[in-house]
Image (cartoon, rainbow, N blue to C red):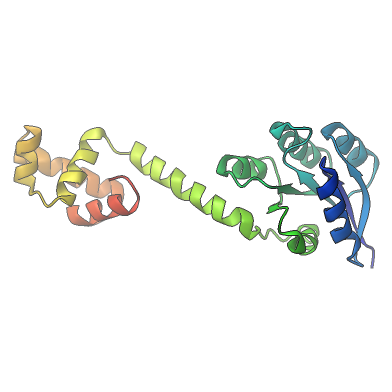
Length: 211
């Protein structure tokens, strides 16, 4: 059985040594070489048949270099890219996956890197725990934003009134509209939030961080 060919792209000499040792200890993995810049990484991938690239997010002090390199490598080869980083910021994790990265691992989780390499080579999209939590939070934030954008300012205000226990008649008085108009607003909110009652709508809005 042939070994999985790995390229490490890491500009920090200490991490370069740690990660190289971690890969070299595995009998089924073969570290083809290392690179410290985006340019060298692209050159090596274009010349050699690489299976998996371990790619630092920040190269030469530039956060964009690693992310840009991931996109170029994915576009030009069959290599699977695993991002390595000490950063777990939501926008970086999201951009990394958006640029085609197969996985995203913090460098302190060295012991998980070999298995991540094997999974990527096998085409198994298993997101490491260091990225999963960040992605979940970002997904929740995006869904909250989407829901908030789907509601008008008046509808959010009505949800707040309902949450505080106001009747439709009271809501109408507060907003200087008729009870009938208030009822229409409430029904519209119920439909938008896909619930059955105004109280359910207010509860859902509270849980989703809208109120």
